[in-house]
Length: 99
Image 1 (cartoon, rainbow, N blue to C red):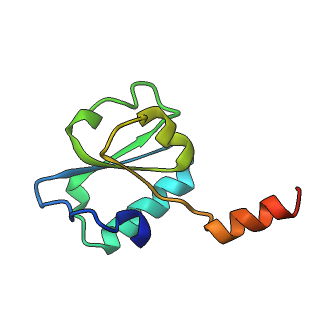
Image 2: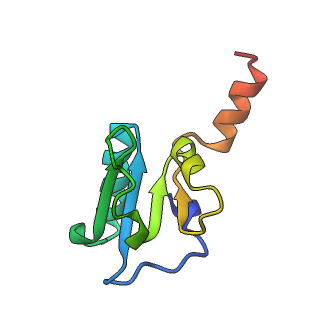
């Protein structure tokens, strides 16, 4: 998470931060990290891509936090920050194991 946000300005108190994913556990973890970073719970927009009309209200978000799959819904959107749950080294190990 810190690497994902490196070089980004912290959202202001008036900015809305969206969390978008189809995976409920990702949403829970992202919300936990954001609350620990002292993002106001009232500033969070939580969306599951499994819900109808999940895009509603996202135009108001200054930052969109999502997993790598959900990020594909926002191609070219500079607001997107992808929280990867698997490290580069772990991905490399999986590639090398030929699984």
